[in-house]
Length: 598
Image 1 (spheres, rainbow, N blue to C red):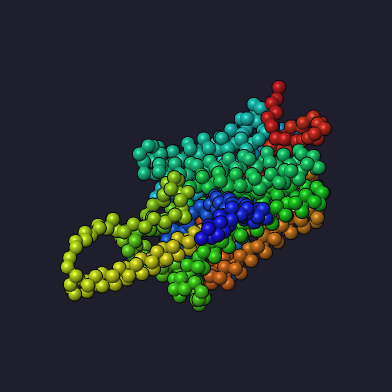
Image 2 (image 1 turned 60 degrees about the vertical axis):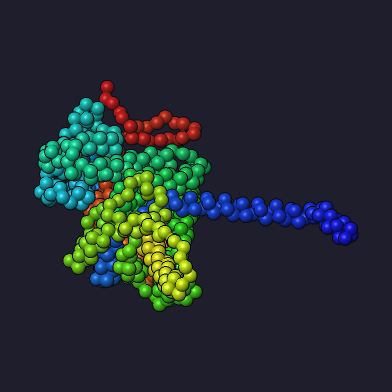
């Protein structure tokens, strides 16, 4: 026994091998790194635009009907023809022959016609957005036309007065002119619709407050674009790569700002982020790639954009895997069996019909904007509304950060606990106990099935939201470079080209080829997304894209007109220039600033 004790003590006092201790420490560090990386990745995914919202059931039903009834011919026509109106408007405005700014504001009466038409188009588009976002406002075509004409006439009066006082050309005409535009728009809306519509307590003021941040975000990003373009041109060529690398940071910050501004308009959040931020980013890249620059800068632009595409597709793949897992559980009851390929929209709608026992606070029933619905679809939504199963209104911004956390409450509230009283062990008690056990097992199975259906609904609606955002981003980044190439190629043949900084002869085939290469990459990524969704979920990304472009036609066209008509020609000399003195760091720089006449 003494030997055993000594042996035990000897084993206990045996020193641990240094190699084994090092291995344990390295393993612990590796686990810690993996845990930290997983937490960082989870936080990163949580703040992405595609994870900040989900579809409403009304929007899901409308999309499902659109996919069933819309042909591929119509889908392609909608996607191709969407940018045509703004392109025609921009080219026709450039066809108006201008005269030299040195001849004064009176001689440049054609320029004032151009400004009048531009402001009238923008005001009409802004009123169309207002009519679309507030359908009960009785926004007729005649009223929209009166408001747009009044704003354009007032804007021209302010510009001509400024030209007489300050001198022509009036600097920052289209950028700082947004102040006068906002004041005139507010006055005309009150004159046409009555001041009672906009007083505190009016039913329309709830929508007006939501739209205020929406329009403010759009106009803020418009004001940010020109300084970025000027910054790229002012930095020496050797340091322009730093400006290119700053672009993703600006894009990320701008998207967070856009999401915050549209937090109460969840259904238009993807469209707003794409046409707010990615529109300006694509226009900025196209304009920078058109200017003379080393070849490596063009490759850097393309590499940055390609990295952005890969990150977006990677985030979408994680969401898609989760949805596939829930679909397998829903259709087969096992994660290891592969069910027959079925359309994801149909699967989600079938799961919605099963969800009648639990209240799902994370799923919205009604969309923030009215959608085209048939009588049968409207009755289906009203039936779901009567069950009080899904959330009827948008959540506040404080709840939006917990989008992926589902809270289920039974309709009858918290179940009361049953008291258990000791009883004699009789045959009746045993039989009753067995029946209760069977009921408990069945209840657990039903609850598990209900939870699976609810998780499928939530994850599926989030996936559709994510797909919509990614499709819009790829579409915008594809059409804007093409639109810019067509516009610049046409402008090169017009006499107004002499009033732009680069002048005639600066645009050529190499510049167009670089920009079109960027558009080709975006088109390929959109085709890849269509292939993946069709293969995994029997779902057409192009149909969803066309559905968005048709459903939000007024919102999208208004943003396209505002962005293109304001930002593309902002370097026109008639908007004012000021030559900075030569600087060894910045070089020769031309900026639009105030130039007062003494």
